[in-house]
Image (cartoon, rainbow, N blue to C red; front, side, top):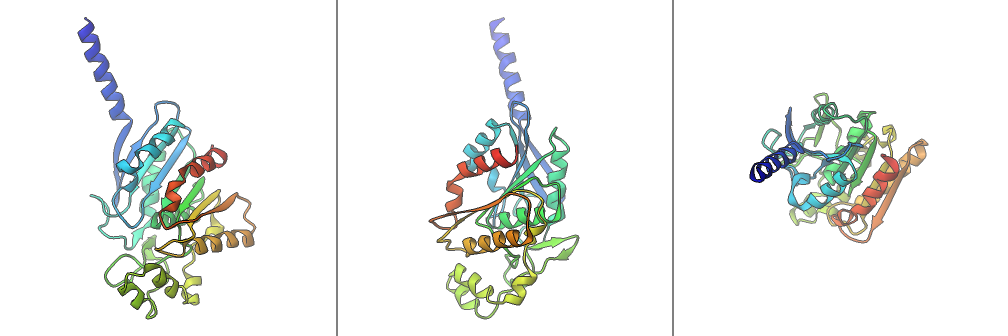
Length: 275
């Protein structure tokens, strides 16, 4: 009898563990949903950057996922390129497909709130989602950009993002940026591209349209892009537009990956602006 009880317990435990993690597929997206054992307080979505695949489902972020689950948040690790059912490249990614996946999962859960955490290009996507969809409740951008840039192709002649089938305006690679790109000096290439002020203005992410609290975090010595300076520009535009929602920019001494080392600030922000 004891043996039968033990087997039944192990089977029940295994079943509950299986149900706590679901693989979900929607048009041009893949995702893994992690659910807490207690009542769900809200849905947190994780978007990776130009590395592709489902970064937030990796072992690297297991501790962070567990911290979110322990606080009662469901966590959706979402891949929008570089996974089985998503585009191979970060190029002309349809924002609406990403939102459709998030909405699909939200409707599966007893939640009304969505928080989106994005890193690097994923931060840009998080901000874009917030600027187009008013039901996003909270946005966290780690090493973000303030504008749209080209897709990661050999020719760099198309936008990273589309909305309802149309490419979003982007800051093009100009002649001044090419020598830096050939030398692998990526930040200097971005800085050269941003000298095109006309294209920069046309390509801005409309953060003033976001109806949610925003946390931006950046490294002041970012070797990939001038994320601190770009985040400052977004904060200034939020001030100028008179946004009534909370927004802040935390700067750290360090490079592009520095914000990822300070997830305690993200958890604190969620506690005060998402619960």
